[in-house]
Image (cartoon, rainbow, N blue to C red; front, side, top):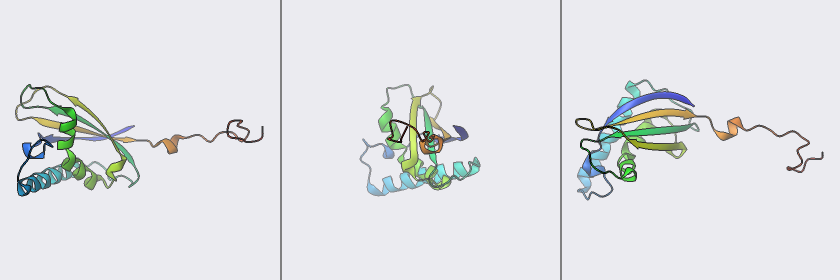
Length: 140
């Protein structure tokens, strides 16, 4: 695993929550802003563009504005537009992402810290069995 970089995003606006019911135009504006913000921060952090078939691990640390119980899966859903911005900046299909989430300490204004880590794919590390391997049916 290779740490490619870290970006700090603003706390997601309420309109991006899956439990919110904003007007469609307010939701579209919030998504556009979150996507562009993530794209710009990735480019500013000089995180290198990856191969299209690369596997990346995104580790989210959510630093809320106030100390209150939060639902991590809703927080991840609120980050969908930002994840798309990261995908755009790095040139990787977001189906190749894996995620980890945790809550950090409360900070004024709130923020989300995203660590971007390149993960070696399983087929790159797979060893070829010897030709006389009994399980695979080779003569032996």
